[in-house]
Image (cartoon, rainbow, N blue to C red):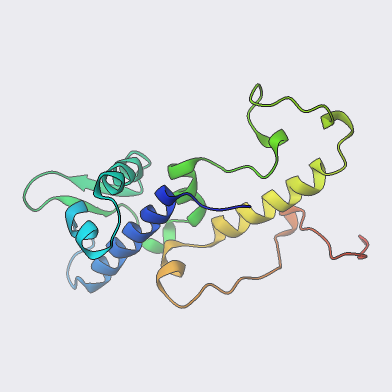
Length: 165
């Protein structure tokens, strides 16, 4: 089943914490929080948390600063960081079926006549559209209102028995 990795879960926890600290600061957008502070607040493995924060810094989603007052800070307003960007930075764009894997990573005997390739592509595109429309801010506020209204460009799956117009 589709499931985010622990790396991504810990990254999301860290990013929401950075957002919360930024929101608490009255005069500064760049509030730096150490990986140690995050690790003390949440029971996550510190080594893995540090690796995740470095990956987020490489993806330019967080800023990092060394020194006694250093740590990590959001590189952009939380409204401008999408869940899709975060997931991509930490685990790449997950696939739903083997035929979506990069060339050479799979051998599928049915690919040329596969009846599920196109529908699964629409499902994947709809999932990614939802991830891209969900911001970090959405994770820290009220629960995200999930809608089944996938963008038309995603080729949303139709209900069983529904025909296209």
